[in-house]
Each structure stands twice: as structure tokens, then as C-alpha cells.
Amino acid sequence: FVVDRKQSSSSIQTAAVRHLVGSVTRTQGLRFAVVVARFNEIVTKPLLEGALDTFRKYSVNEEDIDVVWVPGSFEIGIVAERLGKSRNYHAILCIGAVR
Image 1 (tube, rainbow, N blue to C red):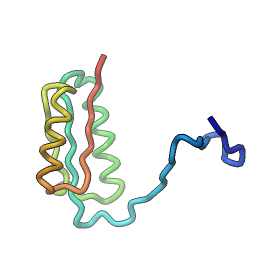
Image 2 (image 1 turned 30 degrees about the horizontal axis):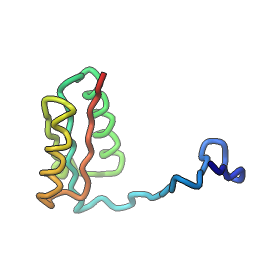
Image 3 (image 1 turned 60 degrees about the horizontal axis):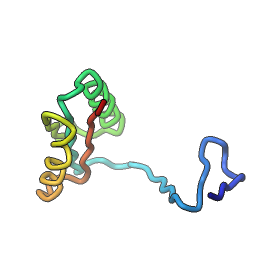
């Protein structure tokens, strides 16, 4: 475990973990899917709202976002895999909560 002391305390880097930093500067033409579990909706719904706010902040058009509700967290991976294999999306965001 190696810590680079030159970094600020909020971004400590280790030898075992790579940190990649990027930015989205252009969202035109990008399509996104969000897979959300209905189980624990009291948690997942606010997370979805935050995600949609972030998409709006980056000027993603609403018609370029598909939200797919699934029964629980178990189904998230199955649906996300199918959406990925469809090659219709540039990114798939998964939201679930397990207690």
C-alpha cells in the first residue's frame, strides 16, 4: 500500500488502484440506459432522480435516455447485459439498493 503524499488529502492514490479522470464535453448523439430496481424504491427513486439531473446538467436530451425498471437488484445485471448486447447505448447506468 503506497500513498503519494503529493496528492491532496481528498485524492489519495495507491499503487494497486488506477485512477482515471475524464470529462464529458459533448453529449450530442450519445444514448444512455438506466436500469433501476423497484425493490427499495425509497432509495432507488431519489438516486434515479439525481442521475437524471446529472444527465440534464450535461445537456443529454431526454429522448436519449431509456429508464428500465426491474423487480430487484438481482435482475439488474441480466437486463444490463441484454441492453449492452443490443449495442444501442453508449453507457448503461445501474441503480439498486440491497439491505
